[in-house]
Figure (cartoon, rainbow, N blue to C red):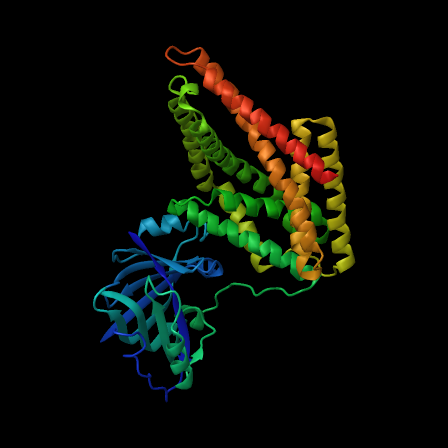
Length: 471
């Protein structure tokens, strides 16, 4: 199994279209033409759960890419995960898709056959494809329907940042038009992906909820792929929970009942992993900044062994939870929200703004109370309230430009109190490690005490900055 980044653009063409000249698009390049016959069999659940998340799974026959291909959205295009050919979807991919498909079986939903005239433009010295232009004649079979069309695909090579202007202009002059379909399957089958709800109060809530749900599903796939989307997934869950807390009166009670508790449960498991990641990096960096003569004993080994062990244990707990019916039920509820948004019909801008302002006032009170008391627990509550105020402002930003200032304001508190919380947790960790080192033969608690004092100073500095920001 290996991965490649795919960046391609599509154009629709009619029966009269003639491919323009390509041999001078890239200076000094060669153009090699081949014709291949491709058969792509697409798989999804009967309910279209993969397509709802912008994910495609297909079996490809007919060229050097023969095998199974899983296409996953990425920042700069799509990541294509390839495996060898087999009769049925391979377990390494179906297991990766457990959350996306909500545990449901995969079935063949469409077969698309393509006669492709492939033009690969490459520079001889580098022997690397700069651009590939594919002129496709396509026939598709979906639900007893037969469809046919022609299209152009332009795939960019790894070192090519964007399509050459000359190529785009020539395609347009020859009658090609940008395709509204991101894939051949999207042309013949409903993608199940809802459109933006629009700039209304209900639409703002629905769009914000949808964006977080998409991030959570992307995080599920990332975790199963072995990447590290812990932070982004936690933030999406946090935003989702914040929306339920602040704007719950504007949501259908039957649809949201119990979901916040389940989100809290899974977020806590992710938090155990994330906290260990942050603490390992934070303590390691602090240790590297100390003069060598102040590092007494095998401090780095103690830090790495203890914190890494905790992190691996927490990661196993996340993996176990992700295989549970409880977790899949949570994803199923979120998937339902994505298709049937749990927003009440009548919502005014005034009502939306009123609830957001209430969250801001609550944050202000808790921040002031935390600073006045100096209590770490109260400061942490103030930080969480500031997050909710920020996220509420993010949600209503499409309806009120002034909300951007509110987002910026509470983001400062979130950052400063995040530093304070990290220092507080690091202090507890260092105290625990120092006590163990101080009572273990061959070790010494001195360096842990030095690091502990540094974290205490950092926490005090964060409190001072928050006090100044509050005015």
